[in-house]
Structure formats: structure tokens, C-alpha cells
Length: 83
Image (cartoon, rainbow, N blue to C red; front, side):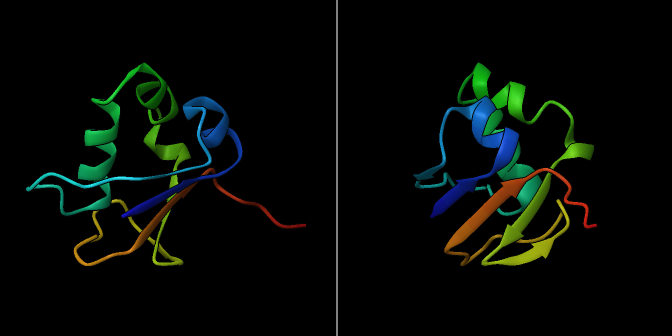
């Protein structure tokens, strides 16, 4: 699975993208975030405030409880405002 990080999420993780093999039991966006946070302090720092995180599963905005089963790409980014 490809994981993409944008804006300050990218800055805090130190990565723009990575490819991962998820362990069994990681089936939602929230579970993916928990798994990432356990990988290191940079992830824990990036995902410390979940109210400031948005996710897209295969380029479609999804809530944190959305399934990621069968997904090819998950993107994380801060809330976006227009203007």
C-alpha cells in the first residue's frame, strides 16, 4: 500500500510517501494511524491531534473509521480551506 503525506504532515514525518505492508488487523484509517504512530516518534508527532488530520482512500476523502481493505493508496493531509 502506498501512503502519501502532504503539507505539515509531510514535514513532521520527514517523508512524502512510502510503501508499506500492513499487518493483519489494520483495516481502517484510524487503525493505520495507530500502527504508524507505533513506528516512531515522527509519526506520533504528526498524528498527535487527529482533529487536524484528513485522509483520502484511493483519492476519495474518508472519515477515520473508513475501511482501507483493498485500498492501493492512503493520503494524509491537514484540513484545507478555500478562498
